[in-house]
Length: 82
Image (cartoon, rainbow, N blue to C red):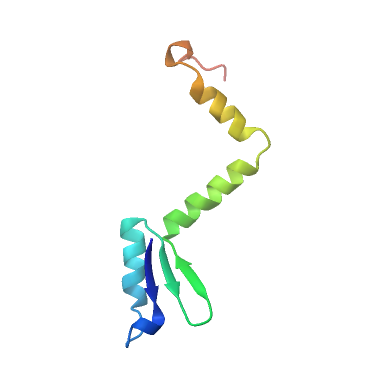
């Protein structure tokens, strides 16, 4: 994670540049101020994080996913019972 300290820069940080960097690299940016710290992430990463948190909040979902991923592909079927 790239870190910036606001006190190290004579000029204000270029917010547009930081947003573009976070979006293009899909890497979070940590900005440390005198009193607090903040993290910038891209909108896509934010949506992915929200989706992951939602899916993990479903009881039994993670366990079911791990169980299914452990099943050999040969035991899977391409026919759905829908």
